Length: 475
Image (cartoon, rainbow, N blue to C red; front, top):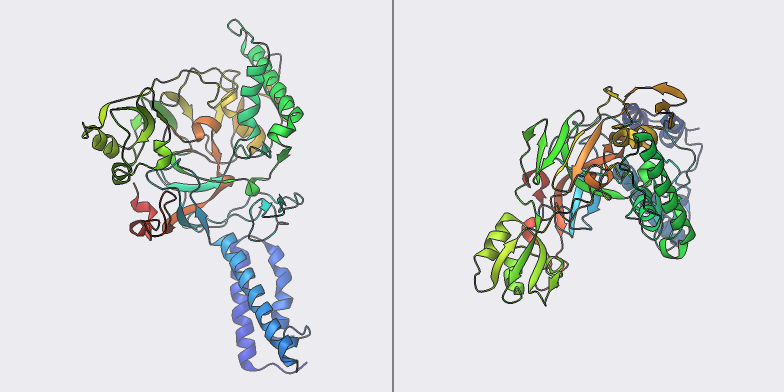
């Protein structure tokens, strides 16, 4: 071993200090494994890290220099994506017109603090599936517990948040956007014999709901050609969703005639909130007018020519703009609201709620205790069982958690209520319930690229006005 120079020692000390601060920040002592390798790279040099630099073969030097640079770049990008930020593209219209399909977001994991990987053995820079090969990108075991490093703050009311799909724990591979929770119960109810539950006790109703769910699950399993294989995914390998947080831990949320109330106080609606309307017209809406009002081709697609009516989402601005065109628009009506709550959370309780009149429902808070009864159990059963890992059963009208009879439960995590700004075209908490804190990924900071799928490259595909727009300025 050659005696190290003063410069080498200083470099090694700086690298070690940075690494030790990093592993303390992420709460992982496993990072100490890398310490001997850092010392060796700078001082002892037992491992020939740069053996190729001494080669007399120019081709080897050239190739290995590229390999070295690529490996360094991939490792750096992997750690940056894992702990600092990642890119995310808006795939659906659920947040329109605040965020548009084709917006590319710079998502900060530092805003709420990055999570320690819960599934450590996975293919870097992939989600849950390896492209082309179409196979899992991860090995399910081992699974590490949930830990989050310190960040700049917590989720705030009306923040736009990226998170893992809560009901993506079990799903059918051919319909990955629909968790098994959302599919099995409605299918089971539809294809089985209808049961009159009018005079049933809460426990009897629970038995019927469980039957519907299991019946629907069995139907999905037996029809794999249509639905695909039923699989499970760990928390950090579930689909990424982006919605607006409209309810915080400990708040009671209620929706009255489309307006959200928190603890009885009205919450401000986003400026670009959209609702669905029936637009009666004399003639089809021209593309020029649609583009001027921010109406996409997807919005225009539900046109019923026989009735001369569009069924489309509109902002206040777009609605006013259409009403001003008396030469095209006859009238704009609200669609008839359904009272069927079979598709709304919780699926195993007849609430009579609708997408526009929902609740009240209390959002669980870490350390808070809720009194449990068979009447309110459907609201909190999934958080207790699926998100916090307890066993839960009901016998002879009594609730048992982890085998012990109980009448209350203290939550281990904070939960949030997420909704899209395109209120009538958003699969959100009204359908699948609470978002646990361990599902939170990060906060979009700005839009770095925006592509309009309805336009060509030479006709406005690049939405320059949206590029480098701060997401916090989109209210």
